[in-house]
Every structure is written in C-alpha cells, then in structure tokens.
Length: 382
Image 1 (cartoon, rainbow, N blue to C red):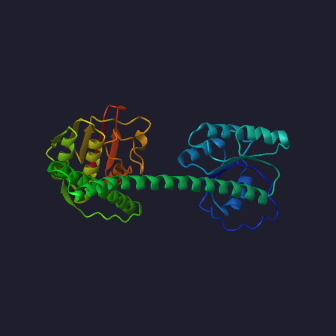
Image 2: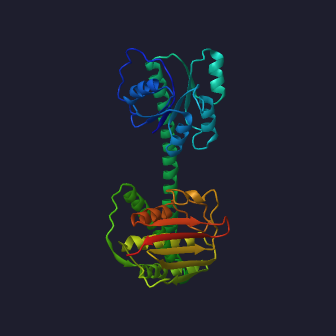
Image 3: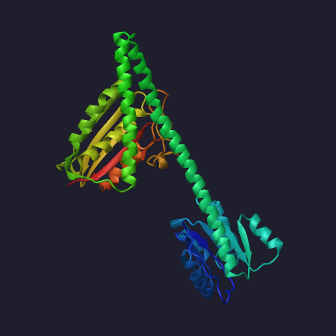
C-alpha cells in the first residue's frame, strides 16, 4: 500500500502516541515546499507508515507514476503545482482517479471545504489542526482503502470459485452421462466407441484443469524447481506437435512446422525439458483452441544468441483491449464456440512464468478480432 501526502500544519508540542497499525506497509509520499514542516510531518507519519518526502507537486506526480499511492493528502498552496492542480491531474488519470485525496488549506469556512469536495477531494482539513486529527483522518481513509481491497478480493474469489466449479463440473457431466448409457448395454458398437471417446476427452480436460491449478499454485508460491540440462528445442517441439496433431486434425486445423536455424548455431538451450515442453504445449493448445479451422504455424529460428519459437494461428484473434491482459492469471477471452472447452485462463499465464524462469521473454501480437494471433518466445541459447 502507498499513501501520498502533501501538507503544511502547525506542529503540536506533544504529539499523541501512535499505536501499531495494520496498515504499516502503507507508504506516504509527503509533498511540501516548507522543509521544516516536511521534516516534522515525515517524522510524525513514519512512526506508523512508510514515508517518502518531496518538495513539490510536479515531483510528486513523477513519483506517483512509478508507484501508485493509496491516499493523497495535499496542501492547497504550493509552488509549481498547487493542490487543486495536483487533484485534477490525479483524477484525470485512470490509474489514480480512484485514490482517496485529502486537501489541506488555511482557508477556513464551509465554502472552502465545499469547493475542495466539489473539485473531487474526499476530505478537507483546515489548518491549524492537531497531529491527532491528521493521523485519525489518514487512518480512516486507509481503512476504507483496505475495505475496498478486501471486497474486491472477495468478489474475485467468488468469481474464481464459480469458474473453477463450472469448469470442473462440465466434463464430469459428460463422463457420468455417457457412463450411465454404457451401463445400460443398449448402445450399438459405434455409439459405444463414441461414448468412450467422449469420456476420455472429458477426463483429459478435467485432468488438465487440475494440473493447471496445481502448476500455478506451485509457481505463485515460489516452490517450482527447474531440473536444468542442455535441451534441443527441435526435438521437444516435434514431440509436442506429434501428440497434438490428432486434436488439430479433428478441428480441420493443419499444423505447419518450420524448424530451422538461420546460422550454424545449435538449437540447444539450458533448461528443464518437461517445463520447456509445457511452454510449447500451452501455446499450441491455445492456438488450436481459438482456431475454428485453418492453419497453425510453428516456427523455430536461432539467431545470434537467441532461440525464437513462434506459434501463429488463423483463429479468432485478440482485441486491442484484451491484448495487454492476455498473460494474466484467470483471464480469458471468450471461446470461439460452445463446442470449444472453456478453461480457467491459466495456460498462457503458466507459459509466461515458465519462460521467465528460463531467462526468456514471451510476447503476444494480433491485428484484432478475426485476424489470428502470434505468440513469440525467445530463450537464450547455450
């Protein structure tokens, strides 16, 4: 958490004792052109929160751009950029418009407070005020920030649990339904084979969901351990394509591979063979999933000290709005049809984490909806 403060006040002779706060991880960016006031307030607030002090609003905006605050407490009268200008700039930015902002001013009276609140401030303190009043106001607004975060987190948990329940339940329905029909022994041979295929496919989908949940849990907790060794990328890519070609053909998708080096270098990287294979598998599965019919290209090039794996599809594409979030956990664009499996939006997140653990980079590109997508992985060569 990060709190942003800019103020000028009259220090009391005996500041009130400060109790330990559950918000002690909050940061306060103190902005005041008066060095004495800035130092005093910094000492006062640092007993309860983490404080960084700067001398003007322009510098404050630069600091805010690097790390978002949880609360803004700004003096109205400041050189270069006054409190109202700072308030306006923060409210105009989509990343900071929801941050609580408290204005401090020597202008007394109801009209001054109304002016500040109408300008978009959340609170207004008239100087001189006591240290106790300041601390109480800051604590109160931080509590509201924490409450909003908890509510948002709870909504996320509810949505996630609902998604997990649905995605695990959907294949189970197919498995149980076809199992009952098989037990009836009234199915002809062709239908019985179809039932077994459906049961196997749904079981694999369910197993994949569970595997993804376990993988992302291991990655988030930092418990993943790579068994690094020299690995030839050509071989693992071919193995993944061979295991997934049948699924692609069923959808009318042709996988075209171009595995070549543009130099005399080897295609060997240092990494965990299973995890590198998982990266390719996640990306290829994503391409097949979001392509109704067409071509998926898999290409490997080695240039200088990098191996570049590129998987390009002719599928539904990615909107410009969703593209920045494509690798985030638990996010997923709509599947192309009701016949396509859903998912938890973990595959690409897992791929990114594994690529970065191998010292590589991953990027996604798309010209928009209906125009396919391209995922590019770059890994350092041995």
